[in-house]
Amino acid sequence: MLAAILAACAWTAGAAEAPADPATQAALKVARLYGALAEHYVDPLDPDRVILDGAVRGMLAALDPFSAFFDRAQFAMLQQQARGEALGFGSILYVTPGKVLVLQTAEGSPSWRAGLGPGDEIVAVNGTRVADLDFNSLVQLLQQSRSKPVTLGVIHPGKVVAQDLHLKPAEVALPTVDKAFLWSPGIAYLHVSGFESKTPQEVVTALEKMEGKATGEARPENSAPAAAPEPLRGLLLDLRDNHGGMVDAALAVASLFLRPGELVLSVRGRSKAEQTYKTFAAPYHFDMPMIVLVNGNTASAAEVLAAALEEHDRAVIAGEPTFGKGVVETVMPLSDQTGLALTTAQYFTPSGRSIQRPLPGTALAGIDPSASTAGAASAFHTDDGRPLRAGGGITPDVEIPERQLDPWATFLNQRGAFTDFASEYLSLNGPVGQSFQPDARVLEDFRSYLNGHQIRAPQEYWGPDQDYLKLRIKTEIFNLVYGLAAGDEVETRGDPQVEKAVRLFGRVPELLRGAAAEAFAEHKGPRPSPHGRGRPDRRGGLTDECYR
Image (cartoon, rainbow, N blue to C red):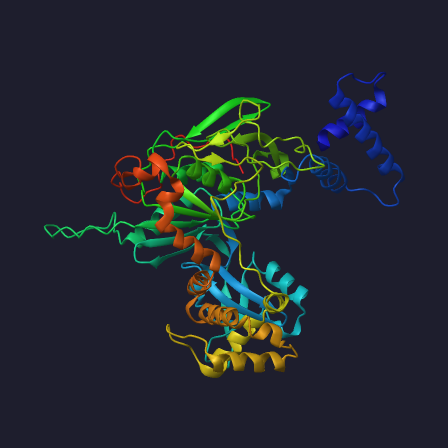
């Protein structure tokens, strides 16, 4: 764009008449405007800032919220995210004014190798005391320190003297399956935060671990074969707050649960013929009953997966209506290591539905979610004849509202009161055991903590919020003692939306109905035996372009 505008500027100096094509005429208007700015503006102009950051970003913003220009640093970060990696130290931190606590360190990361762990307090960064900084300065210091060697002053739990730890940043893997545990015997819970190239294998690894499998592990010669693990009897796949990612990764995950050759989505754009994408014969297959939990932040590739499982009668969808993003962005590399994400196509579900909701004031304002791939309004059904709603996004089969917090509980979360109290409680009482449950005495300690920090505990909220207060206190204490995975499990088990979704397993045949329910036990063909632990076969995936 910059080169085209500069070329247009040069053309205006010597050309006799304007070219006829609209694109060049539009470029000439921008070139003349830039020429006037360059000549008369109070200070010299930086062309990159004015044209790339101003004109190009403004032009894309006028189209839709999803098209975007990436400068060199942003494009490099986007490529890291597609690989599921980030440059840093591999720590998840809790940051509040004057205090930084470690909640988790990734195994093998620089933080893990240096000895950082849950509950450690970082009191200094490169000699700068954390307690001396306001919140914005502290966040800025931590961000600046991510990409270069750093010396941290760290106080380990139970200690009073800080220890200096020296860390060097490295590429750290960021898991997309960030929560996985057995809810009860035979019932697995899995939360997928996004879709990247490694997501399918992460799903396989998590499910096999919960099934007690040891696929690929060596067995001594002539030893008796291991007892076959008991298959899982149900999977709650949590896609809440999953903003999407790579659609070919969602396609590969769909292939783990659907028969080979089943349609997952079709893609249609102005510059290309319609393409269809079907499941492939993955080396892993799981046939347990499924419930998929979604909410208003479930978007894009996550909606593709949920729609495919719903429309092939493979899973019950529960929760709240999804976001409604049904357009495809193609990521294009540009010169100078920059990039462009451009909306190039619309995708449709197996039944022909568009998930995209109309966006007034943008180029997507005229999308009709009730139109099928043929373009005309249509009624939509699952394979087994269940009616489907078409209005943008996915409407759950069973709507389950999320927990509604009162203003006081919301304030306590925003203030970081639970984490601060957990740190103070552990300093005074020492580590807790796995059986720890906050009781009335702990709640009184919490009330005293609030009073000491000039935070009122109104009786109108204190009484009704008792169970929630206990849940949040236990979550944060487990975060600091046992790590984020343990705290996440505590919080998830106390989530009423998840609890209600799990209760639906007894109603899956009723909710799916008809032939699909009657054939559920042998769902859609025999279970292939796995072939090692390599990455699932991605034949048939979207490989030519990076779809976001």
